[in-house]
Length: 235
Image (cartoon, rainbow, N blue to C red; front, top):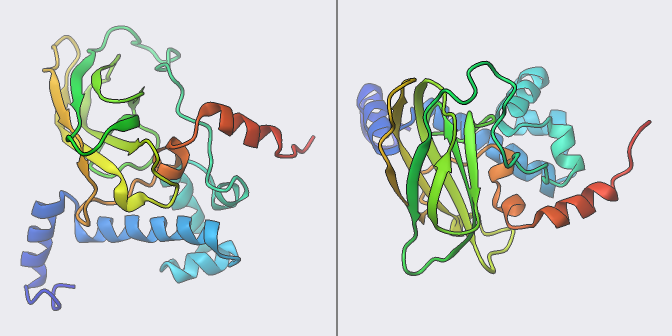
């Protein structure tokens, strides 16, 4: 890639990181897993074949990274046609320190040409939406938001939105926002954020977490339950 761009490897990596906020290696890894998600839903290739197609030599390594990033195993992702249970509406209360940490507040804005119908916002340790967010909020449109009990750390607030009428194959029409780094320390207030949605670009890594897929967030919880009720269970 550096040769194609006619840069030295060091300069290319530095410029890539400056533009995207992510190293070329991590960006490529995210693209591989996103392609694996697509193949799981659109092809009859086995999980082993898909792992090799997207660049993994070990199916065990592929399956482990897929589960950590997407939230479910490749087999489960395919079996459920990419649909997974939505993120819980309320923050966890089973960890020590609940109620002591700051609340992250702000306002979500949208451009005139886009009216979001559903927005999922999550706090992640870096600019890639992979693995479960440390905290999250789901909004039915733009406006004020509050994410309670954000633990100590440095986080990135990633928002993914779909608008009314957007189909499940319209990833290129998704709107996103990345804010951060946001440093949170117990006992100190966190400044209010103005979060602006913008059209997803080629410089944005894919959202690997299944709950942020446009195909998933475009459907209602009622639709998800209907799918779950028709899926056979093993006693």
